Amino acid sequence: IEASFPLPQQMNRYYAFETQLFQVSVPESLGVELITTAEQQQVISARQQAARDAGTKIRQDVQQFVADCVASLREQTAVLCQEMLTSIGTSETGVHQKTLNRLVRFIDQFKQMNFANDVEMERQLERVRKELLSKTAEEYRDSATARSRLTAGLQQLAAQARQLAKQDATELVDRFGELGRRKFQLAA
Image (cartoon, rainbow, N blue to C red; front, side, top):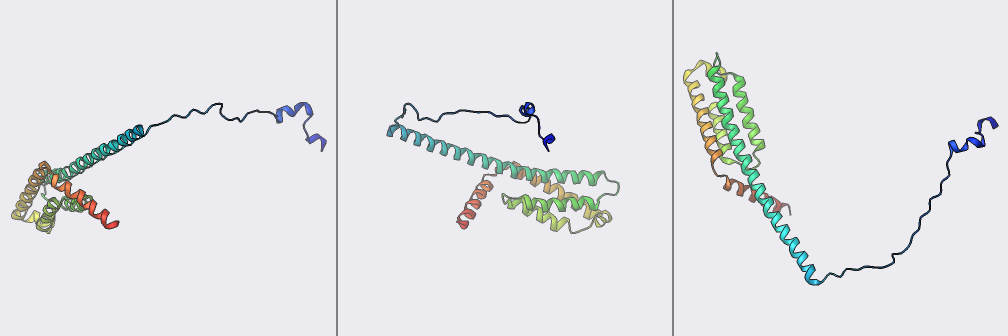
């Protein structure tokens, strides 16, 4: 048993004993800065003004963000239509079901991403769904009249989407803010 204990000369290698001293005392002098009521009012006024300025900036930034999102979704609609027209025009067989399905998926995604409630663009897309996507690609390939109706409809949708993207979206943005306010009031 004695052999399992370290020799006293080797104890420093295994154990250390340290002492640390500290002192707790009270401050020697109390320095109190007096703030006048006028200074307090100035601080309160400055904070209120900063809050008003921040609120205005946030509202402007949110309005710009919503307007940019609306314009972007509308522009993406126009780009998709142009890509579909290019695909239809350059394909040997004409219209592919894959191309039509891409528009169906886009319409569904538009509805999901339409947080600003862009009723006009959604109405245009629904019209296209009813008028142009009720036929299969095979039906469009078999009928030159149907194919020309499809390309004309896509061209019209692209033009309308571009026009809507360039329009001032202030009314839509304002409705977006009102919608949020109504939902907030209903929740309260």
